[in-house]
Image (cartoon, rainbow, N blue to C red; front, side):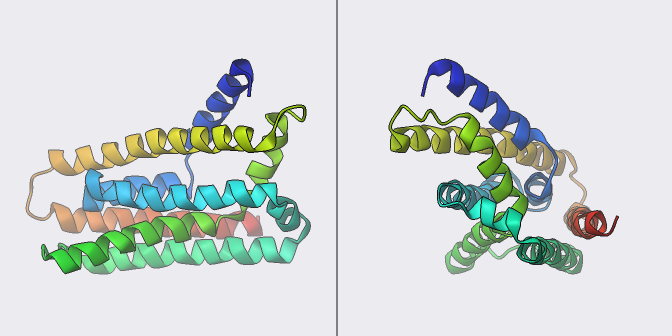
Length: 207
């Protein structure tokens, strides 16, 4: 991939990542409720799903979803339901903290990765977006595999930087508030944000 083309793709990836959406909201809310370090594990799950998106785009998954309205809506509504479920769980957590034990921490980290993965993999718009964008940056007169590796690495780097920044903002807000009841308020705030995000996804389909 030529440098000029790559630089444009990098800019497009950064702008796409900066746009508020479910992944951004989950990153901020996890940083707020759990802290920046733990939010990075959620972002890792999002990035793993993005790798599947890019691979699926090469197999035409985006085109299949775009052509099947029912399948698109089913996946989209599943993602909305998952957002709302995460929000309800955060609201019910109140001021509780995770235990410090190694086994509990390990399970919790796996859960954070899983939350990010499930959220992103149930966002069918990402498949369609990737399918629409990729052809603009793939040069047909050059080998495909090296180009896809560069595109994937660029997409993941942009996502990590942007979502990491959002999570850092949430983590900073958490550190600046030292009251004992902040954990409970953070969980409530994160829960409300996630529930509203899920309801917005549903509302868009009804408008």
